[in-house]
Image (cartoon, rainbow, N blue to C red):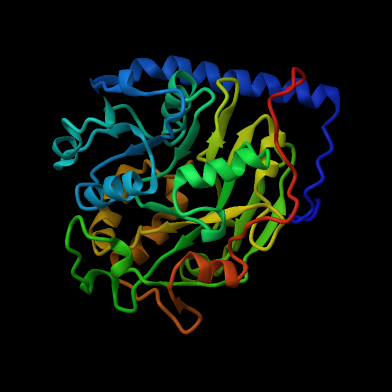
Length: 357
């Protein structure tokens, strides 16, 4: 297995490239078929211009986070948001309604059967995202990046364009409070980082996987608290959420990996030569204690959900996740100083797709 920090890319042999191409075509075909599960509820896509930065999200029951999520990404510079609401039964639909920069699709189809929403996201990216910078995130993820790369998405993407980069990777950083999760009070719509203001600075381990050449970053707080005895099952913490999209490309597993495989070289992990940011993961708001029991019953979030019953049981027990290894969050430049994100140092550039992909 090549070192995660080694950004050299050797194309696979022809037989493997053909196999991966068929796999990518299969994912695009799945996405095309999955469009039938989506019912267009609010269409403002006619307002999308050629230079717009698009945001794609699949969510469910996010009435507490959603107002801040929308405000945060508007302020960051997202021009239009393409959102799939997967059967919300709270006020999520009402919050999304009549917002001029948000187009909404409804579906009650299985999140798990859609490959955890990836089929739906791939369809929206293929239909609307071609040659747009597209940010694909969950409702509990807030993207931050070094100020030297820019302070907004337009500034960041201009920097990436100028240096020939087609995408931008990120470390998913779990944010936690000092107190027991369920004992906190969260004001809906407020900045969750005001409450979840500590994180684990690592170190994190990373390795490349074959045959997709995708990175696999693990470690950190959730592994220490929930997966200490089975670290290989701890969460994957690397993502490539921001990509100048091409309709021939496809996400494979969440935004952890893409096809063609060379796109996975966009991110080399913490401390690597690739420009990178972080996704501040705000999963651990007080509601997570209540939702743990619900999600355990729904069994929609893991390929083999029965293997994660203990994880949900631990969350429903109202744990304290903070420990002495955690540090207080001060901002993205602090993360850069810790080596968790960076501006890059001559990272490999990913240009237009080759005919061989």
